[in-house]
Amino acid sequence: MSVEAEVLLQEAKESIEAAQNYRSELQQRLQGLSQARKQVRGSSTHTREALRRHFQELQTALSRLLSDRLNALLQEVDAIEQDSVSPLDDCQKLIEHGVSMADELLREGEAALRCGISDKEDKLCSFAKKALNIQLDSLPEVPALVDVPCLSAQLDDSLLHVMRERVARHGSVSAHPPVQIEELVERPGSVLVRWCKVDEDFNPQDYRLQYRRSNATQYEDAYIGKDCEFLVLHLDPHTDYLFRVCARGEGRTEWSPWSVPQTGYTTLTPHEWSPGVDGYILSSRKNIAMRSDANPGAGGVLYSSSPTYFCGQTLTFKISAAGQMDKRDSVGVCADNHSGAESLQRDQAVCITTSGAVFVNGKEMTNQLPAITVGSSVTFDMEVVSLFPISNNNPSDGGTFKLRVTIGSGNREVVFYWLLDQVVDCLFFGCSFTHPGWKVLVF
Image 1: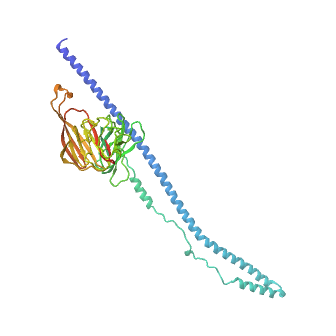
Image 2 (image 1 turned 135 degrees about the vertical axis):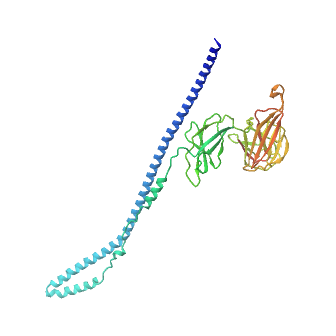
Image 3 (image 1 turned 90 degrees about the vertical axis):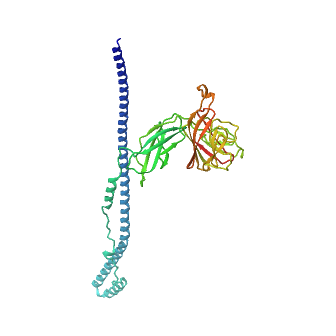
């Protein structure tokens, strides 16, 4: 084959490979378009159903309210009518009784006038006595029309006007939610969720984060507050979770539409305390340790069950209960889980004491952090700075490992370098409390 033919063959192969990559990219974009179309169609259907359901509920509720108000007004009319007609009925009965007595008296008087002369005197005397007893000059009082109720209904169109204005402004349809999830960062047994505002005209007052397993149907609240990130704990590794966020505008009570759900997961084993250590009680998930009454006053370190802390991560100790302080009390990170130590204030470890002192390989630094109390959060961040010469390029042969460590507590932090005499891929964490009452969560 000539050189020219080989060049043409090579160009053909490169063109075929480029065409394959181009087709693959186009197919991925088609898939993305399909997902976008599915999202538009699905969210439109869901929005229609939500609008119909909401306004149907409003119609039912308004109809019930109007019906209840009408019945209340009708009952008020019935009560006024009953109270007003009752005395009129009593007066009518009295007048009708008087008319009946007057009719009877007239009949007797006319009969007395028509009778014979022999009986006329007796009958006239009897009629006169009866006429005196009836008191023909006494008449019952009939109320004037201005003194009896004349019912009417006071109705106007103000309610209709107000309702028309409110209904015209009620509800809205948005093409995009005002907040979206920006980043999902895996952490040991957890996922750090970060979100941001995407609508510049929207002024959020609070955010609301929810999550669920990918195979579940119901979301549950993870966070409500003003921050734009939250660490969702107690997640199972290698399990997909869906996260979504919404916001509430300033001065509003209703929440905004939800963001597009994002799928996240963690492959990192959750941090756990080592079980079975005398003097400590662990929670069911083993991420909370409490110093018990067993062996009060005795030292001893509770380590993690395995070296699960990696450089580049943030390790957090959250103090939820506190006991009596001791100079040996501390929380920190170490290269091994040496069981003979009374405290983390030793070689191959960095820690902070409950009084705020920082120890590096057993030596106290001059810089000090705030004392640890109930509600304190202590964070450890580490990154590899350098690896000093190692024979045969084999880390196991020894050398010096240099880490840049940042310990934060309260609103202060201390930054220093930590030298280890061996290379480690992962580190243990631990705590030591002398007296009972201390309770610490690690994540």
